[in-house]
Length: 174
Image 1 (cartoon, rainbow, N blue to C red):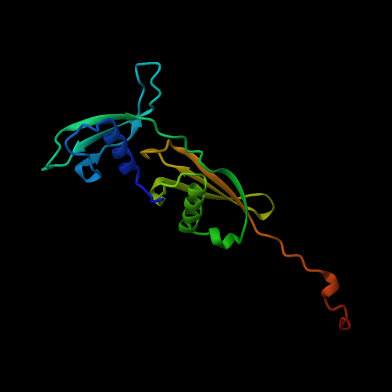
Image 2 (image 1 turned 180 degrees about the vertical axis):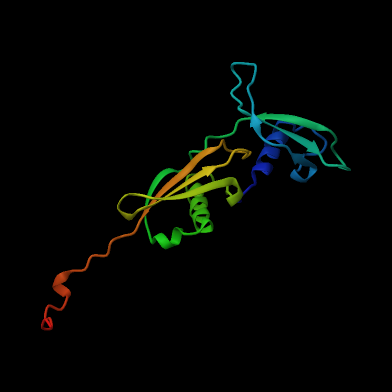
């Protein structure tokens, strides 16, 4: 399945609710305001976010602006995950991002992909030489609420040497 930007996914939701429009809205037709928390007045309304879209100047089909109310999803897509791998493969944010996006797809979010600008990545030292990488979604993401998306604990497999295969014929002491 193809990766679809959060903006394109939001426009698709708008078009689904407004299917009678003469022209479907496209991402290029509007600018997107900042995402903010939304507190609906109706107790049965569970939407938690709002954002204003504004028609771009000289748009052929649209004018004005509209505040959209929608539900952003929980950030906890991956959660804690233990990984046995070469820790050097996790040194850069780009390497971590590639592994996260692969895990997001494996978790069933096949249309989603994060950019480094969407995330905060921190590294700490864990127990027994492990590297702990915490990844959080920043505030303002259109589809997901801010919070922790994954915590990878990366340990390297210890290569044990069988002493019976070594040379025991030592040189003399000096």
